[in-house]
Amino acid sequence: GEDVEQSLFLSVREGDSSVINCTYTDSSSTYLYWYKQEPGAGLQLLTYIFSNMDMKQDQRLTVLLNKKDKHLSLRIADTQTGDSAIYFCAESKNTGFQKLVFGTGTRLLVSP
Amino acid sequence: DGGITQSPKYLFRKEGQNVTLSCEQNLNHDAMYWYRQDPGQGLRLIYYSQIVNDFQKGDIAEGYSVSREKKESFPLTVTSAQKNPTAFYLCASSSPSGRRDEQFFGPGTRLTVL
Image (cartoon, rainbow over all chains, first blue to last red; front, top):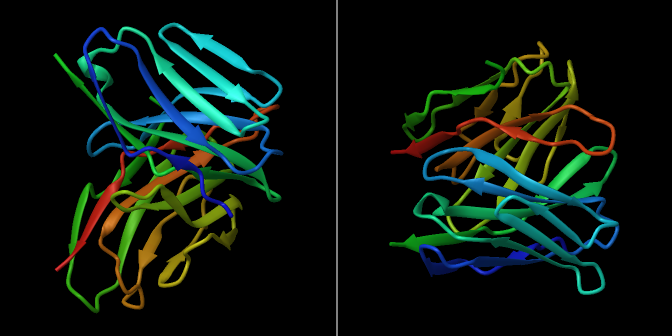
């Protein structure tokens, strides 16, 4: 099927690391993305990883990709209260245009 | 500043009425998209347009219509045929940039049917 799966909720304390997991479906996806959505707002691209990579680091963000298991994760180091948001993973499918298939989103709550 | 604007931010509609949501971009992007977001679900693609005067149905096009007369604009009409239109609607645009097509999103319109 086309379902990209994520756990719905994650709660951490400020200063801890957060790990958000995603299982995708299409082994031929070229790029995998992480988007952030703050309350009542649109989506903001946080980072992406090309399918021939297994890790990408960008400041506090680390993306890990396990192609064998079709598993993607986003680690946020030193999580801050401003990181509280919904995080979506998305895979790109080559269907003649760039179609993004989104996961259900993980709501991250960071408590002081 | 370059970006995508959507208006209005909040929209209320009576049952049986059509309503049009606006989406404008000044990023000079060729492709534009409309998504619907419901609580606990990911974004679902309604319609997309890869070029002016051309558009295609997405996964949940029933009860919706679009037009693409200008590169900058991609309005979405929610018709009375849409059985459950209350949702958050997001517009996005993208332009091929070599190895990946990043989609840029507008701030969204929340539609409530009364």
